[in-house]
Amino acid sequence: METTTVVDRIFYNIDAKHANEYYNGTMLSHMRFEFPSLISMRNSTQVRVGCDHALFPVSFYQVNATNDYLHLHNYLSGVEWNIHIEHGNYTITTFVQQLIDSMPGFTVVLNSINGKLRFSAPYHWRIYADSTCQELIGALEGEDYVGDPGVSVFMPFPANLLGTDKLLIHAENLPCQNRDANGQPFFFSVPVDAPPFNIVTYENNRNDSCLMPPGFAADYIEIYITSEDGNPIDFQNCGWQMTIFVEYHSERQDDWIYSLSDVLRNYETELQEIQQGQPPASHDYNLRTKKRHHKEDNHGKKKKAR
Image 1 (cartoon, one colour):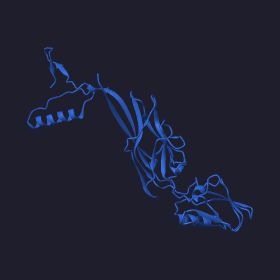
Image 2: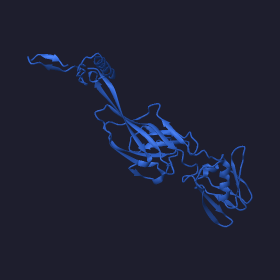
Image 3: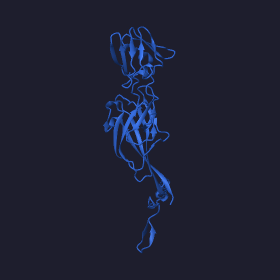
Image 4: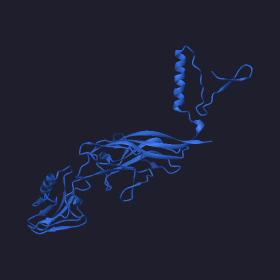
């Protein structure tokens, strides 16, 4: 008996404001959604899980809790400053002004040709390597920078205010095959191609999905959204939406399948019979065998059902 692969797809709508459990509060980037029997093999030959479409607000900042720290030492007074740059989105001009306002006695100048910053102060100073803002100011990660009174120190790289350019959506409890740059699994990724305070739209035009191993089952999905560096995204309590699908593949015998064309053909025939004043025939199809049932008459003979 020949078989045909049949694919059944079930959709689930997810809303960040209606999770069953929140793991990082109003950041809204790590949460759990529960659905009874979300994934079960159901005698299927394979099960795949993917995201059909999603909407994410660009409510996260260029400067945030992961890159706002500046560790500065003033050798004149012997004071160490632990400076936290105000969170938000900046142009290069407003960012330079923010640095000047945050660093006592410092002069910060932008080279408009190459985008690099230079720092100077009227005292000996040091920017420590444990500062998390090094990429923002164009410093080399893991390096200390030391300055003498009145002498400018140039950063080796342009100031980087590009911010997050891609969202990585992780399904923490699903065995996804996709891998990020660090070899960690993720569900799917979304380029951030909209300006701040707009919406990023994701459409799964390639029908991407993750293959579940045999016997896998789940009644929830745990979503964790990060940047490419693995830092959690802070959506600032702005909700996002996602529609995921669970796809069941199974092999079914050809005579099991009752096609839509058969249904429409029978429907059109019945409409014509009604219009002609004839009682419609009872086709009495068995959807699994596509064969008419037979009934016995009073003499024990089989006849087609009408």
